[in-house]
Image (cartoon, rainbow, N blue to C red; front, side, top):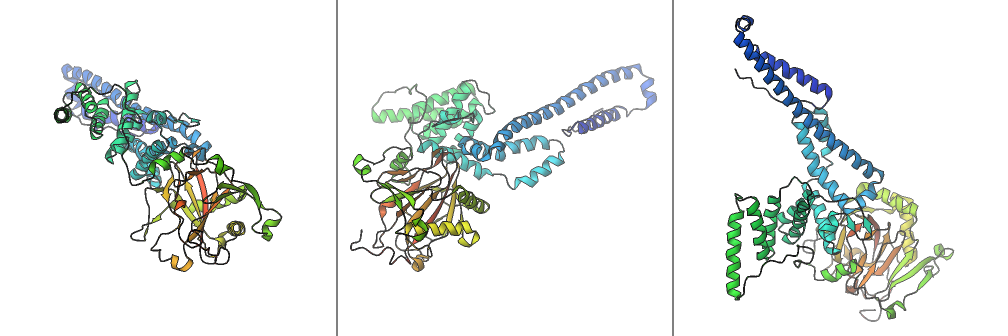
Length: 550
């Protein structure tokens, strides 16, 4: 007689006991379908019941073990996440300031919490599932996790950080226990691989393999890592190393469905290349793959190298001769009544084009109010497509922004008035105060603030963006500089200060030297606000010069 039983149960003690009683009574019901007389008239049958009972006990223990295993897994999750959330909620912004923490939060909420949900769903768990359903709408999705992974790769490139430094939480000037596991590194590599970015795939898959070889436990198998890594190395053009890695894969898993065929193909291809080049076989380098082993592919940005060097504080073209022409002074806005009693302190940041910094231009109270007003409205920053004129998101601008009107709060009106007083330019035709927050890997690659001809339709009314007034509303622990690749300047964020420069010559022609960028934030959270001041209304405040480049 066969009795089929479904297994499952709630993770609460009460639910477990109810399931146990149901389990036992169901088994007993199955085993007692012969009549009572039949049992007592046959010792043989009674003897069979002894063995049936033993099987029942064994089945019961297997059920308990399965329930306890599930409960232990859930408890382990709870303990780990309890400790983690105690740290993260103590200082949420400080915790998320570290890019590894931000990436792992994206990964946990998108991937790992879903795995926990699946575990609990093996048994009815209405409360948990209901709670998950309510909160799932706020969870990051696959695109968010991918974006966070790409942000780490962007930081890796800009600041020339190897994967091992990231995996151990060692960033410039910062040491943290925010680490990446084998599985984290493998997922980073897969993200790059799925995007056909074999350069980064190699770096992260190699790090996953190294940590696994060093004895770290992982869910992913060495065969899976070698499978992805060998093909990525092949795509980078390193056939000898691809062959070596594929041989390791075949040794681990001789029946692997692709490894044998790939190995034969790689070997044949290498032999063909050697014959064509009349060269002898050279074994692969014994040096591990690391940053610099392969050249990063070129992309759309011609000044990529100089831009990233400036972000690292390298290649700054500030000579002693230029420095001698930089001064600091008190600035009263040409005897503006609001600045006479308390002029602002002005420092030259660069001589030509002239860039100045104003100290204490925003108070802490004003900064917090601006952030408070902006936070509910922050949305992915957009750029205007030069072909269609439509606002759209772009990979080269990664931040969230909001626009604030002067009528919304007296502080916004006060800040707008202060910008007018300091610059001597009217803000009547300026754009609204834009507030931007750059999180993990947040950046804005080199761009012009002014519009190049043909102008957008909205510029026919108020003219082009004459000048930029940029407020720094936070200090940044590492990264986040404003750089000008054309003339090699780097300006670092200092909370409460502002920088100002003209985008146009007096003739109205664009000053192409002002092409600038916001470097990726390595550690910290960067808050800025800016005012783009337009041409209209400035005719007598900044009159035309005698030449095109005055």
